[in-house]
Image (tube, rainbow, N blue to C red; front, side, top):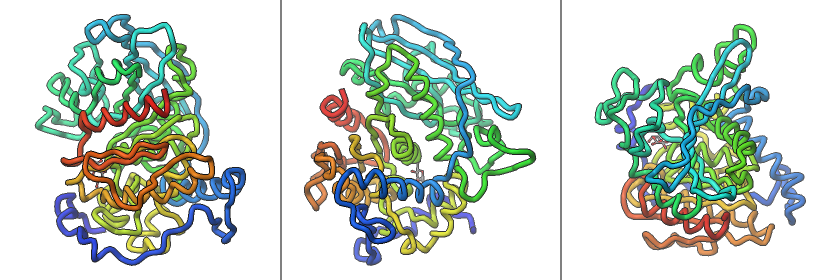
Length: 411
Ligand code: GCU
């Protein structure tokens, strides 16, 4: 592909509703062979598996095997963190396979209580130390994308970026609401670059294999895999209620959260914040970022088979509303931002709406209005949606809504 910078890609993307092509959305309640699905049993035995298989083989890619945690190393535990209101743990998970090793660190804050607590888990973009001012959070040595405004040069994280992303993680609000928060630096699981010689992928290579096969995992599936391994750890940690873990993610990490929730039913809920193309937004609308753009700018995110749908969205037998439907009947929250046209807010809303019939099979309430809600007016059912004012970001408003919704549907 010719390389397009993100800025120029955004410039010539379609943002005109009248130019959205006509398309027919696949019915989540009709099998690929045209059989109507009438109840949750048939959904689970026939339809859900074929959809999951399609997304696995043709979009995110299959994980080529199983790998258990080789060891859990509690690097540090403090009974009194965040001005005494929380417990802090930094837990290192180590993986070994075919003579190679990978480890990643989960930073965990839990409210102080005798009970096991519900938890939000999610990745961050620039290291665990960016989400809080807490000076005891260890700085990752993994490769990071350069970001001079955070002092990140030579792909190394430093003290200078401590606390630079506190605005995206309302740790105090989360703890005060009785939830724990676990975060992981995504670069420790797979550095976000078009290079399959680093991160988790090589641990699964057979002989002199250099990269995943066409149906095998890209980076989004690799990051999702990491979230599932974090879940393996939560199952062992008595302070965490593993039946109440909500996976959260923003943007590319929102795509990751959706895939983690779809592919691992242990997650009790999913929050997609501005996940856009390849996340909550319908591909067939071709509004903002498209299948072509995303594979062009980020060739490593999806499996190679997904390239068959570049400029060919009409050939897709699925769309992203069916990714959301794979999460049913578990609660899911899709959120957009008004100025984040690149992520196609309307396409994100429609996905939530068109996933709703699957939730209804379980007697769960999804999105009941066909028009998008007003700005900053969340609709919170088992399927929830909001569009807030502002740009592509995670804000206190977003977290306030997620917490409120999770208190109702998860806690
Ligand atoms: C780019 C990319 C999006 C992605 C976003 C992000 O804009 O095109 O698909 O969601 O980065 O992760 O911030």
